[in-house]
Length: 181
Ligand SMILES: Nc1ncnc2c1ncn2[C@@H]1O[C@H](COP(=O)(O)OP(=O)(O)O)[C@@H](O)[C@H]1O
Ligand SMILES: [Mg+2]
Image 1 (tube, helix red, strand yellow):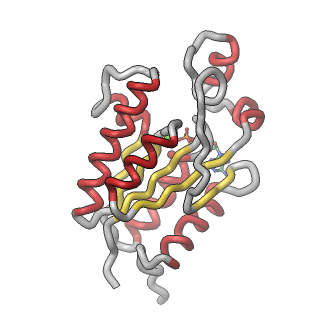
Image 2 (image 1 turned 90 degrees about the vertical axis):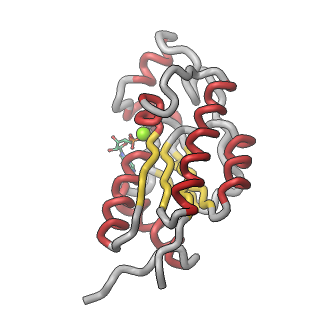
């Protein structure tokens, strides 16, 4: 069986593990010989979406752009992983409809835990009002209701979450099982 192109779309609050799990997944997929690219939210905002802000309109534009590139990659046989917050359900669903094979992964984590973790110090700034329009604190986050996969960084390690993603994709026949020696 050959690898098929598809979009693996992470959504979740800042610090919920989207980038971490994406990278672990990427490493494993490269070992299995797949073509894979990660469109990571922070990196996209430096390049493809430079100049966009955090209004609903700009956030939706950012997501449409990521979705467009992901679609092009996936239709050429690559695994296109996206790791942006993507807070709005409607635009996520639009992208889903345009992409063909599309697997949504909800990276779940409570606000309490994210504030405690606060790896980038952003939650403290959002709570003090220094950063405005911060998703989950002062801006909406619409959790997906029908994500194919839900992972939770409070109850699982990043490795366990990655294994859950891989198991789902193997069951769906979207990726090959690892070679056993
Ligand atoms: N189970 C877990 N899964 C993913 N990340 C975890 C987990 N437990 C702790 N972390 C930590 O939480 C942070 C998640 O950050 P990151 O992956 O950058 O999130 P995001 O890309 O969603 O903003 C990292 O510092 C990571 O080490
Ligand atoms: Mg990230």
